Image (cartoon, rainbow, N blue to C red; front, side, top):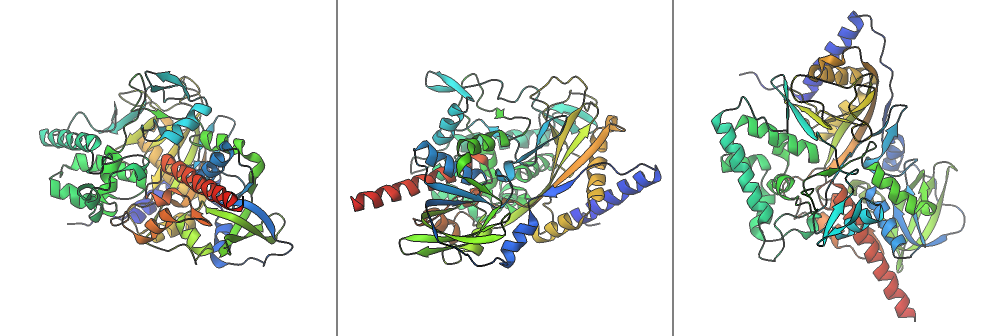
Length: 536
């Protein structure tokens, strides 16, 4: 029996066929750009090629290293507490991390994370922020009321199944009785897990995950892969397994064979959105994706932001920390002395700049490619009409979302389609190599071929394809991650050096990054308050 082709083979063939088709038709190259996280600055940090600090040491009470969602949430919480003696340094030219966005003449569009599910009841700090941003407009009988214009408009999802678009992401027609029975049984199991409470009184699966039960009957699921658990439980339907694979790749950029059973179940059982009007299972989304939230946080602390600065060394110094920072614009380094340093960055970066404090552990990261495709007309297709999220069962991509879904009616005019593909089949290191060495035109060929396979009606309508690469897009929650000593040590860290990133949850979700940032800020404030009281 012939082995299933690797993603490298699939992409190579798809790219070659699409590129040769373009050449045969005499078509010119599609306009577009090839972007991504600043790998040159990243490699400079990796290789440690920074000049030593010069000038006087500067005192700052709190230094935040990293301007992704967790770092912004740390600064936002400090500012909310009335504390302003902090500075946030970000390697890139702008903050936002993988929530950043782009914009063209047609629309704003996400470069990465593009939605926020209505938060669970336990996500109190996040709801507080959403109230301030006007996204929660009030309460009814104590339950949050969300601004309907912030919630995803109909239609939310559609699936291309056997050449026909249908509503929802699980096939409803043309499946066997066994497929249907296993899907229903799986849904019942997830409903049981959603309602389950551990011996410690906590929900079995929560978001933020720090509020999840530590009952061994749930945490033991972290010892095996999600694929092994599915096998053991008899969930063998190919249709069901394809849907579950989509879920793992969607949130974790990983295959079910590489995700822990705890994480796999968490994807389906962790969300219990709390809202009036049956809005609990809906998403908040915007043309620019989660950059709407990141930009609001950044705006609250704009005077404290220092973009284009790499923090390249953090070390304990007495009862505080020394932080060495390189200014990419001035091309010089300086040293800061802080009472608290918050490392709000991926953990593999933290281990490079703070080796005395950060343990390496088993952190692994999934690479992703996104593309924003400007088209002259909206996609159509047989069956259900265009949705916000559009997925094909025949594609290795995760499909596309429509950037203008929230901002205009589907009138057939120009729009931007944000296309997603996690490179999940190969080892992440090999996938990153593939991602970084493939030129723009080859990536455009892959994207174009995939989109036309889903929507042949877009032939001749694609005006440009802008490709974005995330080499370390998200942490992979592999088996054993919950008990990883390095993860636990980072979670339990005390001042002067703290960690704040969704890596510490093993779940690359906005809610997790926000929670980690808020917790770091509260630890820093408690430490400073104690230090002040000791001097009084």
